[in-house]
Length: 120
Image 1 (cartoon, rainbow, N blue to C red):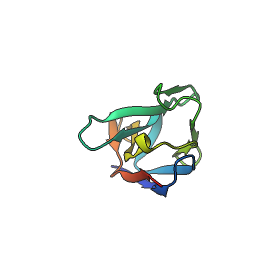
Image 2 (image 1 turned 90 degrees about the horizontal axis):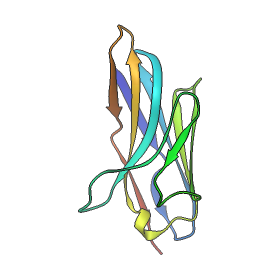
Image 3 (image 1 turned 180 degrees about the vertical axis):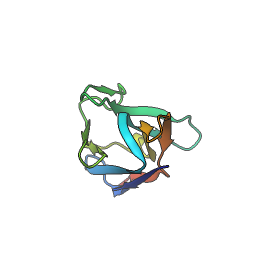
């Protein structure tokens, strides 16, 4: 019903930048919250940032001031601009969307994940 396609991961040096994008498609009626999570080896998945349909944002303390989440509602796409990257940002990043599909069902959908590695 809903497909999420992520792009933009890769290798960055400490202090560098990357931008992730996630495009949602399918039988979408409306999208509520969109967000990015990450999971590092041996750790639990954690929320990085989220944004509501009205544009309100929420960030993990560890990324405040360095990461910026935004969305393009016309394209059903969410972005994560990551600046001043640190080695501890290394993780698989997952896009997550809460949306209502045609037919009225609301649910959470996840992307396949994209690897971000910060290393010199």
